[in-house]
Length: 269
Image (cartoon, rainbow, N blue to C red; front, side, top):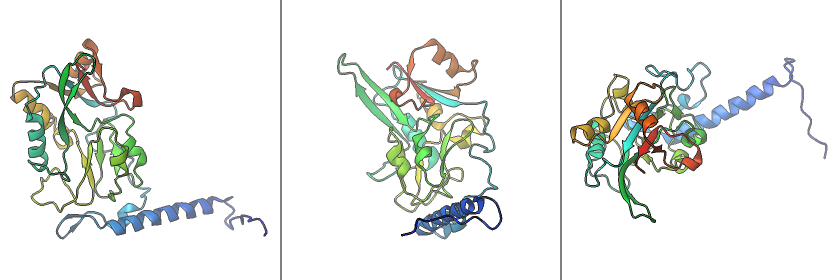
């Protein structure tokens, strides 16, 4: 057999045409995947259009969302000494705010959950909420084949449901089990929180509220319940309450060994 040889491009670009052809082929594969997904936001409303899966060179870069500033790093601080095991105010508030099932079944989405842990050596118990940790180095973004999982300039990790094909790579990559797959058609959705069958979702830090200058629903509910266990704010602002508390008290990130730099910190662990 004769070894394969590459034929120079007639345009004289030195192989640039071949590179463009490869890009086009990758774009075609993305189009095919989206066509197979056929995700529906609601009956009669198609969420994924075939053309949207192809790379769009004119689209703004991830993080260029209105309201997101690279000078800001939104984060949460959970004081586990104030978090009561029997309290689910944060979970209920999340469900109400985002139109999630109030009594989630085995396959229903749950953006925040309460977890009880105990130190083996000391026997000390903690109850704490766990949600998307909004990592600075999010593995869900790294494995997403379409760019649907992305991190805004202000650190909030989101899913663009217009290009999510429901492959669930991000679900497997998340070490916090913080993402859910939507198995059923969605009705009575909240205008600010679109959801769609066949897509992946997770805690958004109530981005629709944050962009209006408000706090996430779980933070407000925890304060209203009289516990005040969750602080929210700009981790890059040394004058913010959360930054002052992080500087004053010892805090930890879940799975610090992974070096993902989560935006959610825990005090008292």
